[in-house]
Image (cartoon, rainbow over all chains, first blue to last red; front, side, top):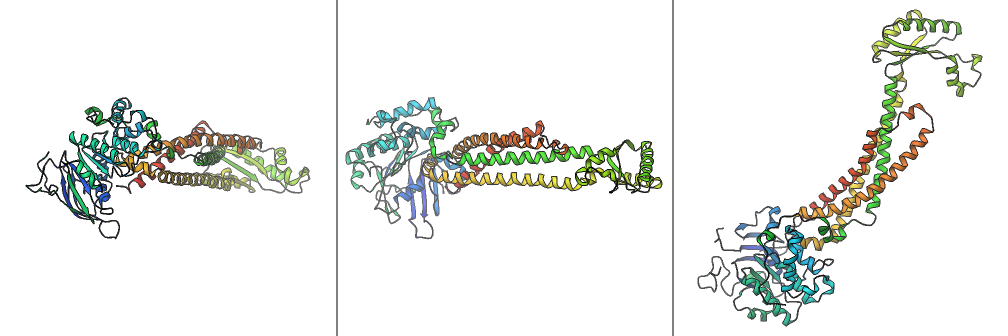
Length: 244
Length: 312
């Protein structure tokens, strides 16, 4: 599969099944471009989380091809995957903060895993906590934080390493509408720095808040493409298909 | 919460250049420390291995000392019932062997010594000659005692002392050497079985710790943590436990060895005295807990890596 250099992720006829059951994802094809903002929508059980798991390399597909940053991930050796995972920030639906670590240590975790020295990570982590408005809670453990605060720690952890792609699974599902909008603005700010953002949500009201976003809709494991911007090669008249 | 531009990392920092490990990494999986009975299990295993190793080494030393003492040794028995004839043949043999170039030295075992040896079985009045006791001559040959050398000596002695029989001393103790060898193998088998049991215990504990920390491990995995990074955390924890257990086990084992050594020394037996442990033996015994730590860490690493390979 030949792809332009500016692609971030390309799925080509990807299918995914768990065990002998029917496919949860079928014939999924799309291309994500650098600096774009995507919403992944669909009803519960449509396959959003499965698609995201493929995106953040928690799983390989049952069939089809996936290219990421110009590299074929299907044939890639398992030991090479961590380097690619470090380029992807993930906000899990259930936050998945490490319960016995403070907010500071949770946010610092990706940097420590990447091998950043302690003296070099203190300021970036403090700045990141300040960015999400949690400087005053840096020493607190997740159990003592509210749902919105935990979500912001999870976002800070996902973006501290300046990932090329940010994947968020229902990031606003557990917060009130005001907090949801604030979290969305954080994603937009990051997107403006060039990070490709993919937000899975079933909240249709959220889609209108980011008018520049592209929409990927999953229906029973199949992807529809309302904006026409996701196909590879992109439709010529699709909005923002040349955006880089 | 500010809407300003998110902070950025310097390129050097973003690249990363230090290893994820140490106390910071250990904090990540506090449940990975195989707390509870694990250090005590390792302590018990190390104690048993230390005692078994010391036993095996003592057996080896006893056998080697005895072999060294008996090397070149042979015994002539004059099996004649009549005392005068027995004495005559014994003197003839003494004279022959004393001038033989193959013989380094001879010693006639005094009758008093024989009586003392036989007293527990025959009583104090063996002077009565109710049971004829052979005359014994302790012979030390130059070089190794081979069957050919013995046959040659036997042939020459037989011409003038027909009731004399010569035997290698080592052949008398062959069954004892066989038993000592068997006990050495038994000790080696015990050490291997205990090592396997320890590895199995660590394997079970590591799997349990993996299950307890599965959520955190998955997160670290998704953040780009490598299998080796995660395995190192477990290795470190089990290494700590094994070191503690090994130290306790070595102390208990040394206590048992010293106690047993004292009791065996009190027997006053020359053969048992040959089983004393040398400095190299103590080095081997001291290496037991180190080997236990290495085995535990290797087992933990392989267990964790094997489990992680089932994740993408």
